[in-house]
Image (cartoon, rainbow, N blue to C red; front, side):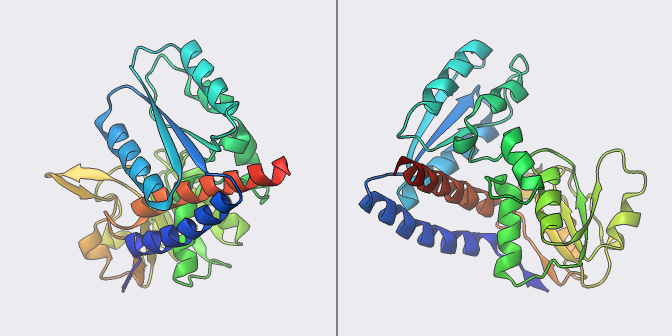
Length: 283
């Protein structure tokens, strides 16, 4: 069994990104990322702080626009418009979730697709499905980088994705299909989850339910990607019974230290890509 070490790979990627940032600075452009953070959700504040720290590590200019939960949709849209028009900001990230009185879809659609480094805009999602160059959501993109780093060939593999969110499940499906994998996507309405996971060469799960995937639900030699994050007895765990499933797996991601660090590394990568695109267009 091999541990897919996302922390180690993310550090390697960040070292490469530092070089890319230096090259861009030599050409007169500093990659810039703006984050919009609404409300006091502790998890959101932690994520934003981690993203900010990672930006500094590689030399990306980062700014956080913090707003109280009471902000109106109109005020939020006005801020997004201002950031869209700022030539020094190449990436714009809306930290989710947003308060219930805000229409999340409307907010995400207001982001300039050229600055959509989270890959959530329908324009970018459509290009992803068609296999065109675009900004892919950071978590699925991070999973693909892990496959690449560990020479895991996806061609013809049977993959079961558990979770069908717009942020992880659906874009994960698109990226896998584009690599010629056969993808089975499951969700809360799936009748017999185990019948799907048992026949999969690769199981990817991200729903936020600890011990959802148990040892009897996977076959010998399975590759397991655990995207879930749960707090159990003060410890961070994934959606997979790691202790037992790892005995059957050929490759498995730990939680923490697996997909999480890769998500942030891909955000940095997407921001630098946006800056390069801006430089190309401004010539």
